[in-house]
Image (cartoon, rainbow, N blue to C red; front, top):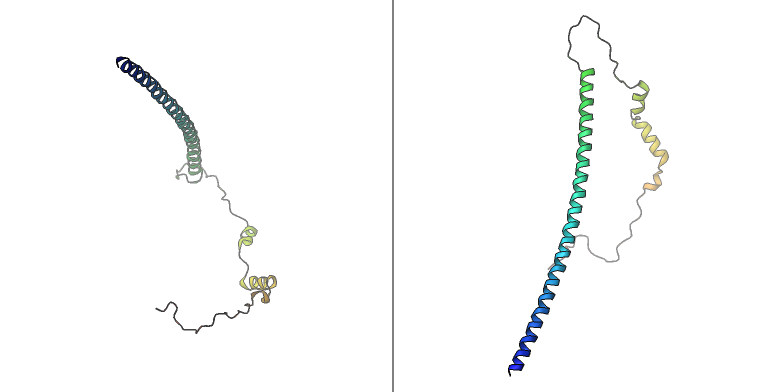
Length: 146
């Protein structure tokens, strides 16, 4: 009986050792998977961080260019009048030509109607004859009577 007990004890110890190794291997495997996932997340975060930094730099550059252009515009076109005794230089505004303005005008309504009538025949607007319904019913019968 002692021998059986000793064999059972040895078998139990071997099972515990094997199961412990399996559990540790499983935990190590999970740990490796988690490390892989974390490293992928960190790579994605780094890539997004780099993209955001590029956007920030581009935005700063564009904002500075807009600011410079605004200052230049206001310095040239909207200067405060300071009497210097010299004749100010004349600034010519960009005014569109009369031909450009005329080209933007709409045609008179009569011309538009004539053009529409030329391009669209009256026959295309005729209402097609409606086919009578195959289900006869009185015109004022209520539906879903209960």
